[in-house]
Length: 439
Image (cartoon, rainbow, N blue to C red; front, side, top):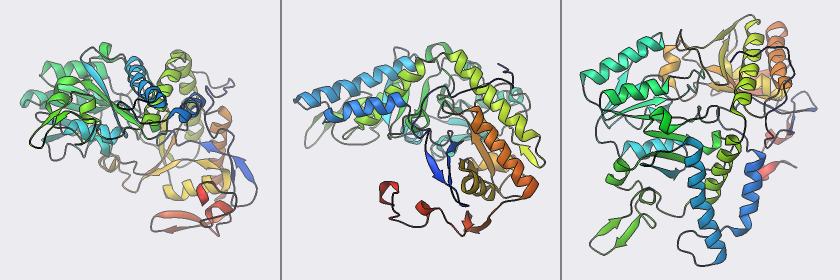
């Protein structure tokens, strides 16, 4: 949906750190402008409230007889239901709690009974786990249409068990036609896995309607940064595979000579689970699911287009794009700035303007090489807590850099750019007064 660029726009939701004040290298402070949602999103207020509510009852789960244990067990298992409803699970699909998307994909990689086809644009989390398990890499074409044709040719030429694909690029935000890709995979006897780490925070995903067999995403990108992720998918492969971890909770019966493993999801959740993380993730699913989808998409589109339009008018800005015919994308803008290393720009934005962006190769080295930016790029990502004021501040800061240069000296130390001298108290050394976590 195309939004107009002339209307006021407040954040959709309240997030932790929305009023965080950060020091500036030249003195004083500014409210932090977070444009790094694609890496880790701050917690929604509903998430922190839910965790605070559960903390007094936190106890062992599944085998505890005490009241707190019963409450914790009920909350942990109820969290599966919230996640399942959030993505409209099919009857033969189950929810396995993991640490993050990377953990989920590595778990599934050990369960796939055959080759896996991937694109060369994937995040490392959906590229490396298949490396020693029959990975077949398809080179991305200039257009989505030609890329899909290449995937079809690969699946037609040789059977594969799985097509593993990103839902939205973590570099450019471009979204692939997942229902169409699921149909393609099924036509050639393969299943489809979607890495939804970037898609789930921005788009509603319906597993039943789309035909997606497996889905993975992380709490820390879904406004629940409490160390949990999920793998959602069909039970048969999960139940046939060896447990991801061997230990308590994954078994039905153990003798000295033998073990009877439990079915999924318990089969792959050995050890004491991250109860608070699972509950936080479920709270985020419930909170996001209660928002009006059309309103969220319109606002995200508005903010992203405003950011892109503002940066486009600055000399030297070059946007990154994978496909010439991509028509849909989430709130991510990746770009380079002629004459400046990405790390230098990111350090300048942080030190002089209190703005947080991402720089580097975004755990997608093959894609960055394909786009001709081996030295990395800048990525600004918007989320539920982003405002028009934030967007305009970022545009103004980049424009000022191009027009007048930085107001401070910066030096690269083994690839890490820092202001010289560093005057921000909380970054001058460990144990600084007033800093969090005992820095």
